[in-house]
Image (cartoon, rainbow, N blue to C red; front, top):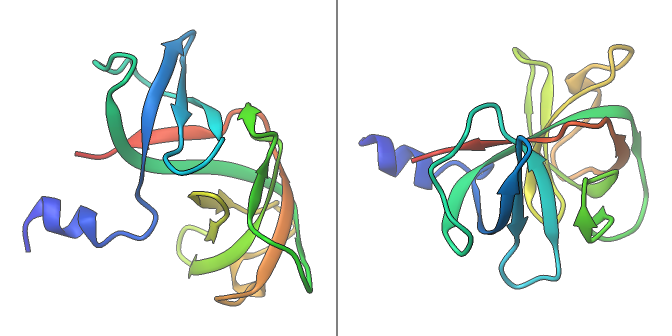
Length: 139
């Protein structure tokens, strides 16, 4: 399997359109939605406004709560993500993360008092996001 084929199969990868870049952050407009998310980047990216980028979002979740009902969303619609609600897509016991499908898939590090194995695939969860949600570009 080629590198690009493996990325295409990664359900945590999403794409967005660059709406602004600067101060260590990338502002991504999510196609088909009103979302414009401010995600931090570790290194400068050679992109311009209007470019389409692909990557993964990483968040440090504060306490994750299981919920019985609700939809998938990120609050607020524009700016730094502060609250996420969605469905657990996968669990990574080794890295102690869960991937949650909100409006985009988000790889979440759990609160130190929680473990990823406490959650189950397809479970609905809700949590606050610590400042500094990041974007990891993929080729």
